[in-house]
Length: 197
Image (tube, rainbow, N blue to C red; front, top):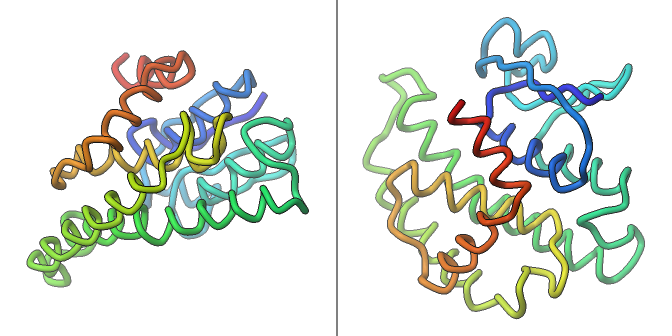
């Protein structure tokens, strides 16, 4: 059984969602970022980490792709043009969605107060909104990569949810409706239920 290190209110949600989609059993070890417990699994103190037998893996997106590859689901096969396109979308989401949200978080509560520059959040919100419109214009089918759900879908929806919690402007209506549909998936709802229990 996998162990997911980190609370569902963090990027651990993505990993839990992936495991639910793949039908893999797991337990959550709820630790806070930057805590001693988190550093026991990841020297940076970031969560999530994933314990798979003797191995401990870090970085939510790397973990998601590892799980997809290992279990043969939610991914195009490695070494194919489809996988290269999927990876390109994944890296774009990390740069244009995740990194922007993380920068806003750092200037809201992560950095010590004397290092925060609150005014930067306005430009980050505008940049996220621009990127969400770009992504909305790329939607062509039920999922980002076509007819089947893949890792980028989970990452994008998690980031859209994060943007709502961070009080970013509402994303493009097409993108918002698309994300709402993915939130109806049983796997997503299973993780959401754990956050409210």
